[in-house]
Length: 259
Image (tube, rainbow, N blue to C red; front, side, top):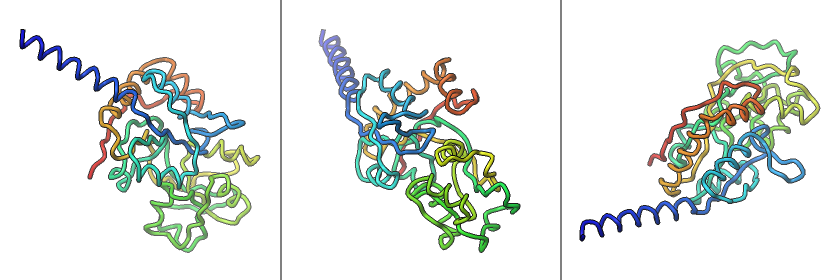
């Protein structure tokens, strides 16, 4: 009888732990980075937004998606627990600050130029003394190029600003993830064909990023929900809708924050 009582107590503790963790409030933050996340008449939309909303339904969570400039979102993610940044690339600096779940999308980060610019780049050294490089404030491009080309960087708060600078010849290069290029150009009345990728810096994987201090169990629940959803035809349709391909990630992993 004593053994049965202990077993029942253990089960109740587990159930209570699951309930409190699953309902733990998250600050869910997005940025204006189409087609990942953006707003139409103040209504959140985009691939990552729809993905998050679907996973929230599975997890019975109702935390609203808050839009902030990337620099502010990144600062909050580094200074508070229970923050979810819904679309972030993983790099050596960030793995000490966030737990990553994914990838949720894959592409590449590269250097774009105007279509009439004939420059050929074999590596990043080819950028030296060749003109300014437009980057997004505190983004992966800035962090990558800061090490070798800091004096050439022209930092903007929004991708559209850098795209305009490129097409107006105010910067020669635009460092950007290819996933967002078509929509960004469309927003300023231009087309993907107006630019070309002159050099691919690296493959790019986008993740859900949970701030340090967030419950590991909560992160695990999001990982489980994402993995289950990725096996469904509904997920394939979602990816096809936003990226015009059904070649999507389907085996998400957890990369726990490392100290």
